[in-house]
Length: 103
Image (cartoon, rainbow, N blue to C red):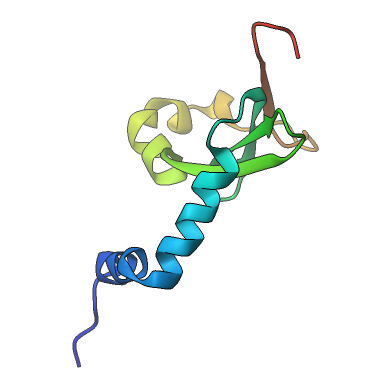
């Protein structure tokens, strides 16, 4: 029994009417909006980005460049270093970026 590749399923979703409607909904949610704030939060599978938009809504996403596998490949010396381990009881990492307007 052969298994389809994940990209086959992704392409099927993107070509489907339901998939296009879903993705257009996301596009409509973001199109024309201004990002007032952006922050990064640590997750088990990498670093997620959260955008706060001018209409008060938030949008969270994972970028492939911030997946844990990619970070391990790109910054392998950091992960091999003994000093890279968080202190016991340390809080989860959060990095907030502010817009130039200070919002």
